Image 1 (cartoon, helix red, strand yellow):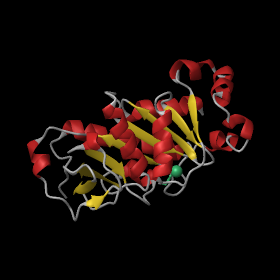
Image 2 (cartoon, protein in one colour):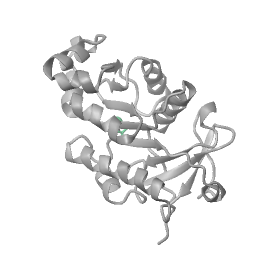
Image 3 (cartoon, helix red, strand yellow):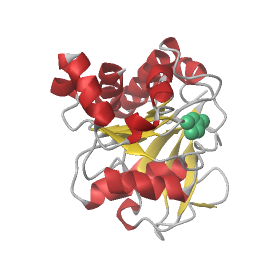
Image 4 (cartoon, protein in one colour):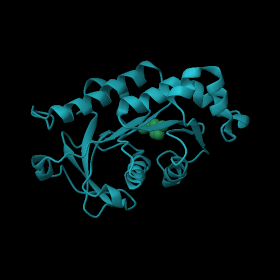
Length: 233
Ligand code: 2HA
Ligand code: ZN
């Protein structure tokens, strides 16, 4: 079967990096069932990709994200397993294009796999990062159980208490996660409330703890985002 990845080595590399990280998340025990999600900005100047017809109707994002006009993302599929994304990325994830109106997306390849339930927060983060001139292209969300367990202690939800504790435990955490771990109070997974609270804290942190839910990291690429979560955990 043909794939959008055929004869596109750079795109292939990026998609398989996501697959590699998906495998790590599963092996770490941080990705029960369909837990976690990954999106990577893969916006490519490739006329052929730009001409590809959508695999169905344009779907509303639920808000307008002006910096994402005509951007392309590889996204884990909603309800898909990380362990399956690791082996078959184009069957458990898809490539989407943001419409000209910046408020809709179309799935363009390889199959009509609907993107992650956290698309609202992921795309809002990508939009915010581009808007402030960042070169970060990856958002990784996962469920590291030890770190999540710590958020059940109200003391650790106070600003930078957890950051300072983690920094004091292992020197690498300070070196490789120098901005520390931000805390986002509990909000419904997949909600714009969670997205907006996350955006605010992106000013100060690259890794954010969604209270009693999971961790979300942004980085230049998917490997860097994963490394920060791995170091802190
Ligand atoms: O995709 O982890 O936050 C499943 C989740 C939602
Ligand atoms: Zn989650």
